[in-house]
Length: 111
Image (cartoon, rainbow, N blue to C red; front, side):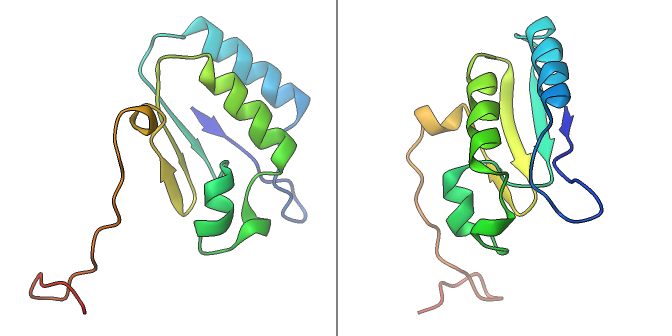
């Protein structure tokens, strides 16, 4: 499911009430269907400090919270992918993440 968070003519990282209504309706109809969500702007607080474009590039806080609350009630959502980041909804509760070392062309860790 694609989420359009761009508002022309200038970049505004937001979603309209109409978009939220449409999302809520579609997600409620397909609660248990495996679903991949995609958006241009990152939607998590973590992404605000880890994405290449910085904290002003993420979806605004109110809409991000509203979207995450909507998604939390839908067990079929497997992943939310956004520009420059990917957050695994289901894995966040199950796996411990570790930062992997960067490897050189010979697959050896950089010092």
